[in-house]
Length: 320
Image (cartoon, rainbow, N blue to C red; front, side):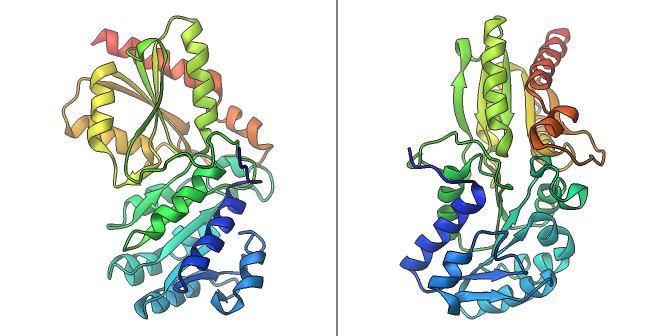
């Protein structure tokens, strides 16, 4: 199995592959060449790298200009600096006119760990991007899928946001595992998967899979599903899973407000489904710094937390 050192390296490899295919692909950076593992790209295609320094608003503005001239820019830096510091530029200069700009945000979620603390742990980015119309939003779960997702968003004619990690990611998929933009993926149906649905996005998928296996030993039948595309959201498939189980748990390395949990709640409510929902994620608080895996456990995103949430969702469903 082909593996990468992390999602940043996988993105960099994909960018090289895209650049070899089409001279329109360019990279816009905000003093983030090293952070995005883009040194090889810069060495091979120096004329296609635009590093504006620590000026994210300017980076997005430059990308908008490049896109308006027919190029396909990828703006790559830390997730929060794209979605918060340059939010107005993303909204007004790229999303509103529908320009073909791709945003790649690193250090998504608490899994970024202890390196730079809460200022560089970005757990609001998905909610911000979901509130802006017309942006395709993708959160791959491992390096191999990041490579596939980079190629997938390159084929979208319009703004996209790709959320990646910090280099600690687990390898879950083979390099050639298909990636279908906008489609929920059912990964396992333990014992038929009728009792509860565990719906995950992003880099916690390995924990969710382990939780489902442990629940199976208790006689709890869980469906494990991945939603790697938050827009366009596979509403039909989410509704089908929720309708079948009647009990749903969402799991994300993000604030429970605005991300996957909110998206699934909207589907359940708007479809009028008789399903209960428990959201596993950051519970609307600011976290501390810490070692990545321990930090997730400390803030309620551990394997046992997912299991407890599944039991809670099932209990509520039976009460109804």
